[in-house]
Image (cartoon, rainbow, N blue to C red; front, side, top):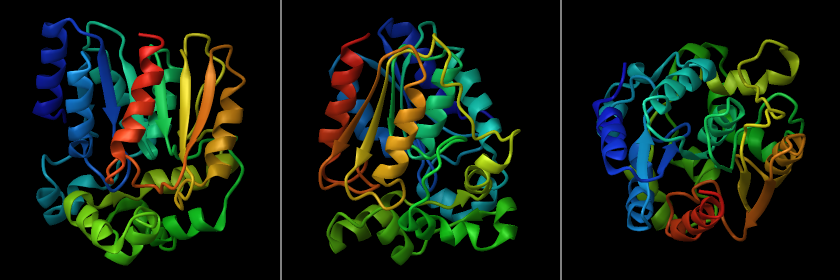
Length: 278
């Protein structure tokens, strides 16, 4: 089901005639996590479009009250949903994604749908081999129970603190948890975890398509969920592409780098990269 907010943003972008920038959220967040980014990019003369995943509720409160709405979403289903929405734009957008949104951004760019792409702390895909212990611990709330493949799983505050908020203070971590955290479908994590054992996995990226466009991978220095080893391995896979591929490490930041108090630094890094090409 398409979110009415998605269609409204697309129509607004088409009417404005400005270069669209699509934002893709990851697990445990909603499209509202990009609100401040959208304002910043609009001020810079872009048409921001923060897309939802299939059936995403409009609010964090609704998502937490009805987690079943979020269950049983796969990587392929989400990617196809986003591709369909992007196809309604009059101009090919730049695409920015965080976490599993970073993986989806690379999938979409690999389909030739982006003029430029920024994958922030991107979840791993087939061919990305490192599996640091912190990443295993961050995904354990889902992966330790096989039944979670068909569920939407919330994080406790302690789990969120480790996976997202380890590089911020306690007070800020609690505020981020209360403001942004929602249950997440378990299926994508299981797909990513088994990608290197499944030749038919949906957690795969076409890294060789010459129409992929320029790509920037952004990593947080202290990210527990997507540590440098994973982000750097994704970057090395993307070097197979004839297009420009770059990587940058943001010092002192964890997985919450797109929503914490230092979000402007990350947004500025993404914007500067996009400005070079669109």
